[in-house]
Amino acid sequence: MPASSIKSIEVITNPGAKYDAEGVAGILNIVTFGKGMQGYTTTFNAGASTTGRNAGIYSTVQSGKFTVTGNYYYNYYKSAGDVDTYSKREDITSTTNKYLTNKSVSDYKGNYNSGNIEASYEIDSLRLITFSGSLYGGNSKNNSTGNTEMEDANLNSMYSYNTINSGKDNYMSIDASLDYQRTFKKKDELLILSYKLNGSPQKSDAYTYYKDILNYPSQLYDMHTKGDPSTTEHTFQCDYTYPITKEQTLELGAKYIIRNSDSDNKYYTTNSGSEDFKENKDKSSKYSHLQDIVAAYAGYSLKHKSFGFKTGLRYEYTMMDVKYYSAKGEDFNKRFSDLVPSANISYQIAPTQTLKASYNMRISRPGIWYLNPFINDADPKNISYGNSKLDSEKSHSFGLNYSSFSQKFNINLSLGHTFVNNSIESYSFIKDGIVNNTFDNIGKWSSTRLSSYINWNMTPKTRIFMNGSTSYDDFKSDKMDQSNNGFNYYIGGGIQQNLPYDLRLSLNGGGSGSSIGLQGKRSGYKYYGISLNKLMLNKRLTISVYARNLFNKNLTFTSTTETPSFRYYSETTYPMRSFGINISYRIGELSAAVKKTAKSIQNDDVKGGGSNTGGGAPSGN
Image 1 (tube, one colour):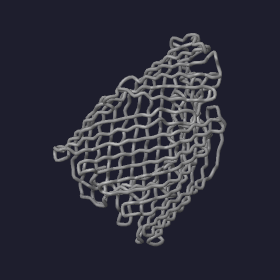
Image 2 (tube, helix red, strand yellow):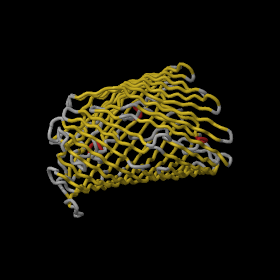
Image 3 (tube, rainbow, N blue to C red):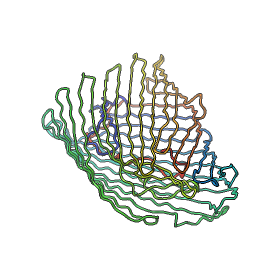
Image 4 (cartoon, one colour):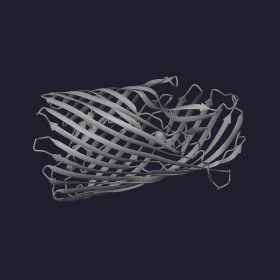
């Protein structure tokens, strides 16, 4: 989005009942200029680096009351070198098969495309229609070779084998939204009707071959797995805002989500050295997970002089149906409801300084990655699978926030405490010498966090910025009889310096400490970079050169897992150094942007991550 089209950016740090019972920590509301000149503006950009290449285009066109914006971006990437992984597992319950060691070397490459289009049409001064659509997709390929060896308590070799793995993934996300906004003669009275479609089909195709098998106690079969998970959502929403007085506002709304998640995983095996793969129906799985979510909310806000108060209550009713077509599981359904309160108080100390206190409850529903029951045993001694009977997480957050914004110095400080009594945790256990990795609502988690953001325009040509946080996290599980706690931190920042001849030099860097989970921890990371920008041709052409992690070719991450039955340690070394150049060229002078309705659909209630497609090492979480 061109900077010339932005009027202001509002930071909403404590969304109320209006913004759903979802995992939303904050909202950026970008306010654009209401009217712009007729015409167009288009920006072209392209780049290349030691790890890939990219190209894109951004364009805005306005004709009368109709404005449309579109962009497209392409990126090809590859690993800058080999990724080396070493891991060792100790089985506390055995002396015969005691130590399992794995070494592997891998590389990857892929590409992705993204594009979106936004349009708005002002029917008249009281009615506005907006449309948006986006498409994101790509594919990735990876190859690896590995060696696995089992030793007894005296370090005598029990068995060993080598593996050759190859795989490719295709993924896509499609979004389309339509919003209608009706304003009234009474100031700030609004009615908004919205519809949103989202689809996210994915495909995976992987092969594992076993070579040089020595003394393995059972038959190892080469395998071929194909996955086809997808989620489709239809969402309907209605929002109404009514100003009771100049100081009081009432908000009402309703929402209906139809969410269908399907997974079809095929599992094929063959004897070593043969390409005649046949489906193993006992290990293949196909199932569907259907959710209908009905929600309604009411919110009340009061603004009196320097004092502000907002409270709300949201009701959500979820209908869940799970059906197995071919998998180890029984069909089941659930019906449950939730009341989700929120409240915050603010006090404007000065025109540029605000103090806030808040409470919010949020809901995170498990995505298909957590739910998929397909067993990935590409590593026969380390398997992973999901849990289709997971419940939604419910988190409670309390916070204090201080912000001060001025032309020269901005600061935002937040102190918060969050706890969850039924958190979804990834956990590992050993059974018959095989580590199982899965998920369950077995955790009690709490976190106390102090966060800060500082921006200092030291001179008209020098800008210094920093953001960071430190937290104390505590994990407990009565079911696993385990607990873990500790501190974590993150810090990042940089300097931007405008130089003569339209040059700008930027330095940035940061890193984090180790992160903990229920059964272990993962090491932190660090990064740094330098870039130089040059503006040319009346500031229409921008050329940028950059270097990242210039003095560190590789970065090693470690992970540990501690359970009553086994201990696990791994380290993975990634190539991190890269160099690149980007070129951007703008034509046209239009400063307008697509108008936005005051409220649109945003579904953020699905807990992300948790993919069990890799069948990899036990998680540190």
